[in-house]
Amino acid sequence: MGEIRTKLWLATKNQGKVKEFQHFFAELGWDVEAVPQGAPDVVEDRDTFAGNAIKKAEEIAKHYNMPALADDSGLEVDALGGRPGVYSARFAGEDASDEQNNQKLLAELANVGEESRGARFISSIALARPGRETLVSFGTVEGSILFAERGTEGFGYDPLFLLADRNRTLAEISLAEKNSLSHRANALRSMIEMLKMEAGDE
Image (cartoon, rainbow, N blue to C red; front, side, top):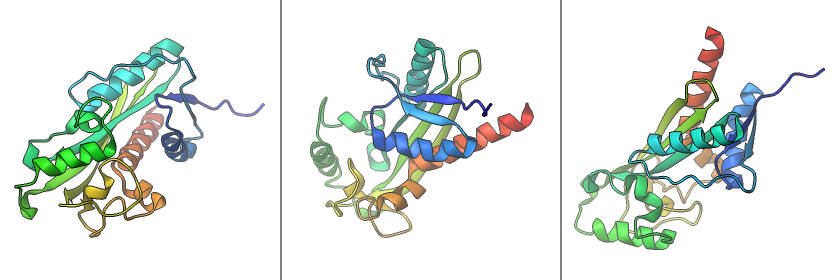
């Protein structure tokens, strides 16, 4: 008989995100799949990225009685006291488009000089397992907010986010390059290391 592989539900319907998680968890021989149609919609009402990720992962894990992953991420801008933070996707209001969110961000930073436009993307990933402690990892990528959009790749705030060490925005690099350095990739690497350490202790 072949080995029994660990299967994880990922609390998303975004297939691009599923592939990114699959890439990292393949190292452990684990299968990651998007939650099935009809999975519970979990309200993200916590005030931290970790809080939202934990809530989503634990509710899905409890519903299916099997391990579940979830992530929450967003943009923190120093000059705005860390906003938009957990409200990144709805900065300009519920159902706001990427363009509306970007324009609101530019408007709020209109009088902020280049030296004070520091920002970072933050990702938190939670792995919930019935009967076991929920694991949480974090990842960041540092940069600053431009005065106008640059680049055509990516989505969300990517065209405004200038990477600290590359003089390019997240919308000016390839998907492969983005996935290698993104906040979510960094959080995923951290989660994999935590799981390896846990396995070594057992």
